[in-house]
Length: 284
Image (cartoon, rainbow, N blue to C red):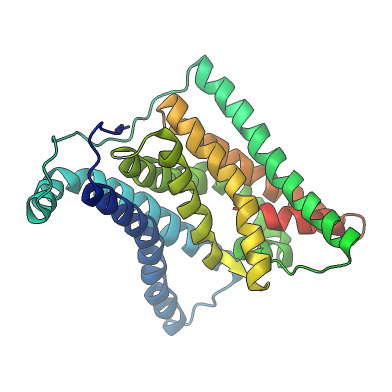
């Protein structure tokens, strides 16, 4: 992963921030934009768009093409595009090799995965529970939105059994390639570790606004604040290990755990109604 240089002109910093935001949002928008004509085409040929098919298409286009595709494309295109952009903007900077380090986790990486998973899951669930308790104690009601995939899973519990392995095999790796590998890697080229982690984490959590369904503006803002906890864990683990496999595993297992717990709460909805709301708020 690239690291910040000692000289950080304002223009260079602004370009890094803008490119990071465009890459993160652009990956998601590209996947969604490609998914729409695919849905239309399937509908025209008479294929029913079931919840299961909708989830599969989302995993294929948004996570697969949008996140992973944009990440790999950026790494491939950067050697040709970056010098051209710098020359047009008059930015004088040393050429640097941009890559996304990935290797089989060693013992330190494995420990980081375990600790990161516990902190991410515990922090998100604790935040959700504290907000729920605060509302009950103050008599206020804050309507938070729910993750669309989790909401579909609640209505079709069998889909949660698909989302559990997909979290580890597709969702975690693809989103981490884009948001930690590319977005955080790009920001870290000109910023030191603390803002280099905070900024990408805020972008990652903020873009989940569009994945929320329902809820008030203030409620969704609080929900994004909860999601910032695991986002920071993903970013810190990548900075610490310089191995994209580590945050990918933390993210994937984190999501898989939430989907597993959500499946249990749906199956026993009468006993776990309060826990269900906390899990929905923590879903990424």
